[in-house]
Length: 284
Image (cartoon, rainbow, N blue to C red; front, side):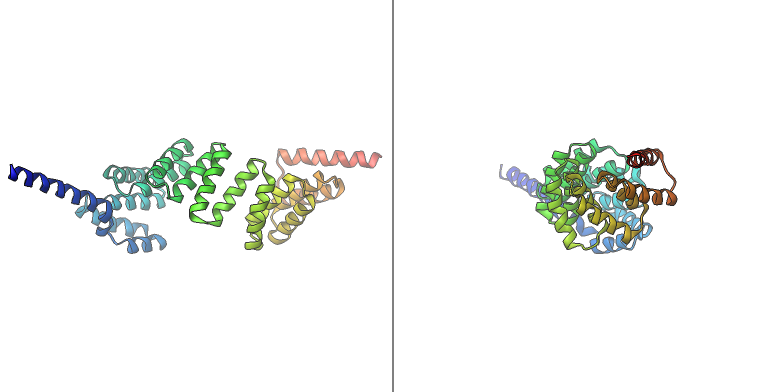
């Protein structure tokens, strides 16, 4: 009886050691710093060879399969990336990173936002403190048009990570919800922190325009065009001037825009609208 008990305890200890060694020490067989350095240098073929050699000795190391999936993702071989990520998940490690990368592939590559949301959800369930899971799921909600849920997840991701890039995505979501004052509150601080950041300025312009703060919006769109000389900003300036009721200046700026680009149907419609306003003004 004692012998049976000893054997039983030995089996328990053995499998416990095996489990914990897989969970906590699976990265020991690969040099993480070396891998990350190769990724940073975009030495994807060299990294693939390195990981293939490691797999020959460590077939049950889920971390190696994860990095194989990551390198194929970076090489834009998404089918093989998913194959290796699935093996990593089947081996049980590293689940959070593998689920997150699968979610990114399904969202960014295949535009399958339902699956993106589902895999991000699995990551969140495994680690509710992992900001990437919330961020990826927020982007899925955003693409699916559920802006309230997207806003909630963006806020949670920011509360965990405190990354200003997340704040910018939160502000864009607020714009989609028509919450212009809340968006201005976020974007104004970002604009002060990152002077002349083109993206922040453009979204702040949209927030000011949305709430009817036309003078602020005009200042920003003029600054954007003068700084970056992009035709789209000249067009936006002309549209804003139209909304402000300055039809002649709007016509002048839009005519300048048309000379710099090939007009589409929306451009023709706007040109017709602003032209008719000027004609009515002249007839008076």
